Structures are given as C-alpha cells and as structure tokens.
Length: 120
Image (cartoon, rainbow, N blue to C red):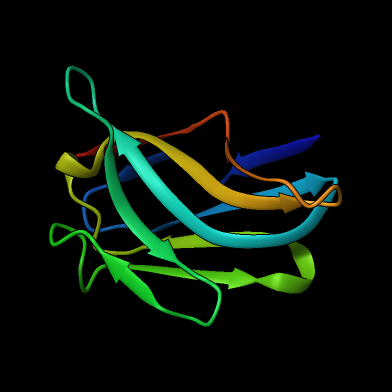
C-alpha cells in the first residue's frame, strides 16, 4: 500500500557532503513522523534524526550540527543533508515513516536502505 524509496547514497571522502532523499508513495492520507536510521556493520540500528508534523526536529548527538533533516509535504519526501561527513558515518541509512493510509489506518513503513560510505 505504501512504499518508501531512498536515493542519494554513495561514496564520499571525509569532510564531504551527501543528501539522502526518501519519497513515499501509495495510499497515503497523511505522513506523520518521519525518521532516518542507520546501521553500521556489526552494530545495532540507531536513530539519526526525526521530524514530526508541526516541525519538531531532533538529532542523535553524534550528528548534531552536521546533519539536517527536512520534509516536503507536497512531495511526500523527507531529506537528510549530511555535511562534514566522517568515516564513522559509514552505514546503511534507512528511512522510516508513520503513515496514515487512505483507509485511515496508521502503521510504520521502512525504505530499502541506502549505503553511505565515507573514506578517510
């Protein structure tokens, strides 16, 4: 019913920038909270940033001041601008959204993941 498709991952040198996008499509009535998670090899998935309806935003301490989350409600898209990237930011980044569908049910959905690799 709902699909989240991420794009924008890739390989970048330390200090560089990337912007991830996550576009939602399908039977969407409303996108509620939207989040970015990441999972590095051998580590648990961690919350990187979230943005909720009304604009409240928060970040993991490890990315504050370097990453910026934003959303375009008209495009059903959430972005993650990543600046001053470090090798420890290397991970698969996942988009997650709480979606109210046209049938008025609400559930969480995940994207397929986007690989971000930062070389030193």
